[in-house]
Length: 456
Image (cartoon, rainbow, N blue to C red):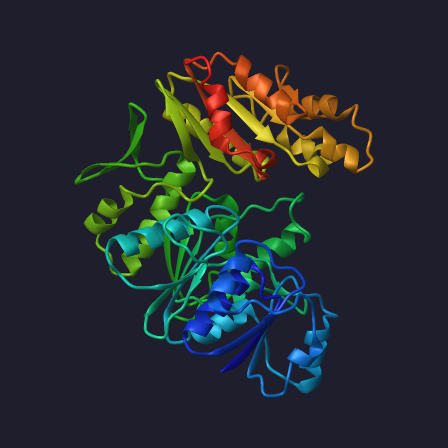
């Protein structure tokens, strides 16, 4: 086939383009912005466009398929040209479905946990030497690509998200995949991160369940109350249903063990979210024919998804972890997980907020009481970024303190201030949890860990 990508520089799009080129398809692409690592990957594959920008002459009537990335707008000149020529235009999830019609499609969805569950399933499959294709939305440990699709593999593991497919296709991505085996980890609507109403958001998951072919399988988190209601509303679907819940576990000397009839299984991860994710991954693997003993042997060596309660450093009994601060519930649960795992250590938690969020009083209010379990709580925001937005910055620290409702909360407004704070912490007997959606001004987290361990 001759395939043209509009917005080829996207993280998934460029990986898909490279995968298709390796299969022998004739692949071209355009984009007005291509950054690393996409640029280097496309250069290596010989697919980097010779000039940035949109050029309608690149779209010709002999093209078999046009794949439209989320970055491309509805008035994109190449898209307009493709529409005028009557070419077949796909969003990438629609095209993935085309490529995987003869495969067993495993689609892992949910408002939270889907990346980790996908990573766990892929880790187990690879550990056991089983071949599979995959599509994920973020870089996973041990896998150097986001997309790997072959002609011969019989199974494809897909991280399915609920966001729109493209600017001309409002359909949720995961509705295209029609999974033989589907998992929903949980449903949580967040008014600050969602552009649609709670009812519309939940309806997407109802439609996802409806998209499972007859005799397909839905695996679901039995402990999620919203999901339980959705299951009731879709009870007429002629599919198998298999629930899972957090397994029994114990913690001993900083190691979490899953309790099984065949003995305790030591893990390299911890926290109730991860334990729930393991239960979901186990159920998927069970439906794929993997035996219990095989699964637990493999999951022992699973470390973590990148930046999900990820180990950074340790020194003389103290540890540093990093995690995403995607919402207040995540902050609260991650703090609890570290405190539960290391009950004899106190905890310092540092959250980085971006400048837009730190200026939004209604957004900040969701974090009320979220850091109460931490022994020392810090919010870091780069105040210079707020200045660039031409906003009044004098009230930012006060608003943050009031919103978090933590009397002892410290607000740090510069990287130097963050260094000074870490230099002053008496870290013996304490652990450090770093949470952010950003990257602490690009600072290597090992540098922050070194400042924390300064008095050792």
